[in-house]
Image 1 (cartoon, rainbow, N blue to C red):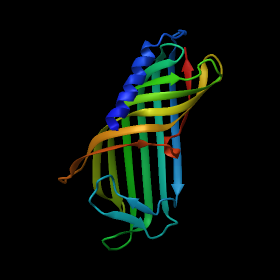
Image 2 (spheres, helix red, strand yellow):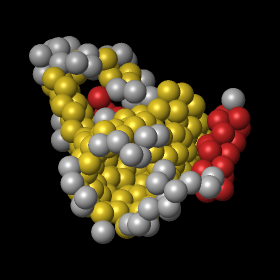
Image 3 (spheres, rainbow, N blue to C red):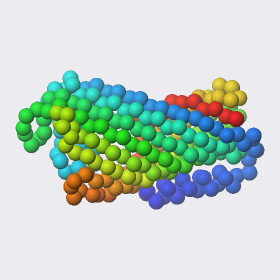
Image 4 (cartoon, rainbow, N blue to C red):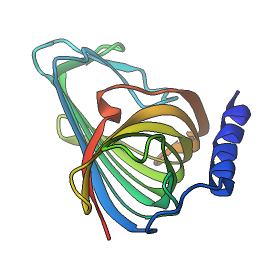
Length: 231
């Protein structure tokens, strides 16, 4: 299934480039979008990072858990014709989870728990606009990129674990454009098909494992709102 999906992405890019469509002004595009989500008392059970063997932390006081996610994604591209745009994209994501009076299934005294992660990625993307002649436009966005992640876990403000990961990501997103005028347009992008393959390890341990996932991602953390400028 994963190989089939990646093949479909590449095929979409290939046939879009080959398509004989009406050309436009071949404008350059500079844009950016962001995502911000905060949840309070929404995640009473907190699993440690993918594949971790350190057990599960859960909150004994469900009124004191908080999860905050902030993402920013600037990009630069060039319109090839009325339907296609290709470009470069940078992704930055910060995730911070805290919980007070948390317990480990292994027992012990309650702790104040904090996990903070930083993720930076860079890659290529294409955008295929389905109805380029309209003010409101719908599009598909195939992409591929490489990501680096670092994550720290603290108990009572004491660092207890440092983890890093690097992974390849590819997929097809969905979105909407609104042409404000000839120079500016608003954007809304959300998730879609997504494939991830990478490796993670925990500092000062022998844990060094690969991971992969494939699925359809559509939730609040995958919705990005932004604006772009053409010239």
